[in-house]
Length: 241
Image (cartoon, rainbow, N blue to C red; front, side):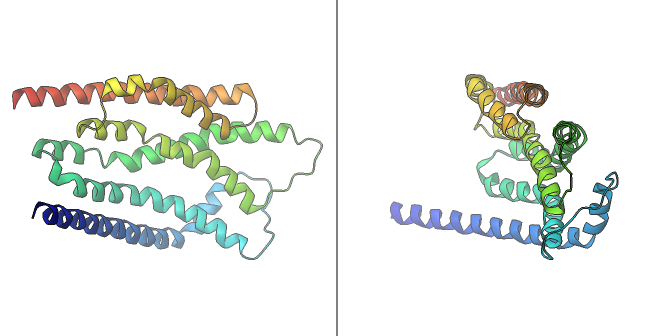
């Protein structure tokens, strides 16, 4: 009987998880369609400072460019929805106070994602582009729309995702999966991973690497500090209870 009950529970969890994933995918598709309505305005704003029109090599290139831009907007819109679906899935395993506390983190997800995108676009992208253009003085420069926006997204989307680190760490600490000791123990490996990420998304010069690595390391240390605060509050509440 216990095996049947366990199997039934497992199947029920899988069914619930599938339902949550499907709802998130539907929300992403709806957001993608909505963003596509305004994608031309987004495109024109992003190329407003260019001295030349971007070229396309095939009729389908413009569609892929618009889809990429709309996709980033759709991700930002879908993030809180996806987080809420995850929260609903793990909610039965949380205490009432943990449910309320973890739910409060969700509105910060799109804010941090947009903040990371803005950091990448406003600071990292101009720096890297200027460096690369300084090396192309002996060449005739002509940007294609597909390559240009692929380059922009490679400079911005990783930062949008990495900026989610503090709130993700706080959430996982709040529900007991992470704690400051684990984060401190994993510091060397985390620093190495962040350094590799920085090297992969920047030009091959030490200045660019350092300018990206330092903010990522600071972001990790902020995450550790926030984890300590959340962990202390969690332990205090458990003691009172």
